[in-house]
Image (cartoon, rainbow, N blue to C red; front, side, top):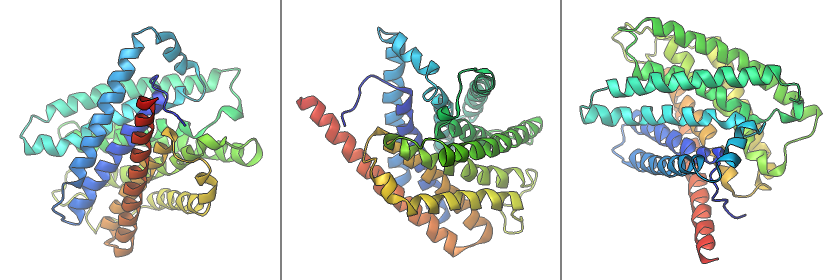
Length: 339
């Protein structure tokens, strides 16, 4: 397969996965108290890819192929991937936070950026949901895993809100975050049931789109983290996730579903192997990174060595897969230059 150098909204899956993996590494190294720069290297890779993909997309958006690119918004599959932009930007802010603190840069820049991105993400929520509800030509066959990208962004609004906004000075935002949480849970249940129905009783996804099925892991994994962050006492001086804080049944349901989907897809590895390596393969990275991060939080909460080992195993797998996709990308780029 050759890389299509005409920019596409789908290419934002690469920086989204890389920055998500960098955050996973950032949290894991801190949890294990490791003196390693692996998180910074992964994040730098993600920042560079975001700059390239984003600038290339914006450049063509105002160029001669503008019409072709705007057609992505009218495409039933690609339109639902647009929240990947706001999702990736929220990941970017979270990844910058530790370095802003280390360099003593005013955190207000991150908070201002957060509210701006959340505004655009909220508009995308309304536009996409209205589109799903009132399109006469929408069919079950058009229901694809990319619908979950919006939900992942909603849960990330909560996670980044707790991290980037001082809820003690702005307590009303805590209610807004709960609104996002309840809305996301409702849509997650609806989308999951309807997509399962489509996969079971109508036509399956084509081979090239199979990697996108891993997005099943992302919303419940991020929901686990959001649930733990929202149920903590934000006025307490104790650590973020103290052992005394009980894990709610809802959190266990979300984590159990994500684990079930991971085990299911692992047992169907031959099913995904047929898809080979392509740009669509980046769809594996972000959901796996999200699941690994959720497992790290659960391990912290339960003081579980088993879950910690599991999170390390997931991280190693994500690194291997990222390396394979990077090698494939370099090979295809060199082949394109030679030809």
